[in-house]
Image 1: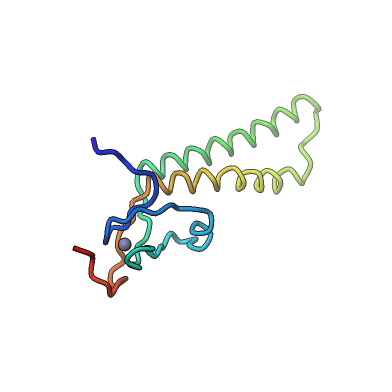
Image 2: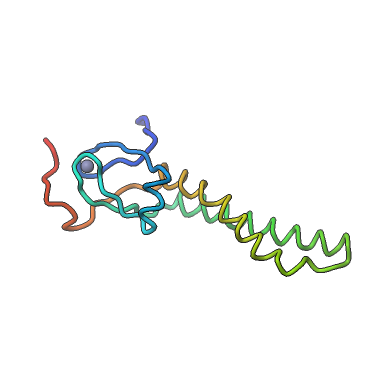
Length: 122
Ligand SMILES: [Zn+2]
């Protein structure tokens, strides 16, 4: 098994670069420009990524519903109406770092057809 470097690897020139927050927010659709060869590539989905992030979303949704049921059973009142949007914001705040982390490790970069005019080095 080969050592897996953290970070994204350009499929054109094999340069590794980090999926930092700036890069993450600038490419909501997972399209990235290599800092070395300026080739365009996009993040492909992988089964591991889908299972990991899908599992995290499912866990968070289950926890959200669980807390609502717990409040309802304990205090005999439904959670306040702001509960859902607040839970949604908390979910985004928790899941975005996870998505970035998993995207960097579990999603391979694949070239975009015609995405570069620079030939790969070597
Ligand atoms: Zn490159």
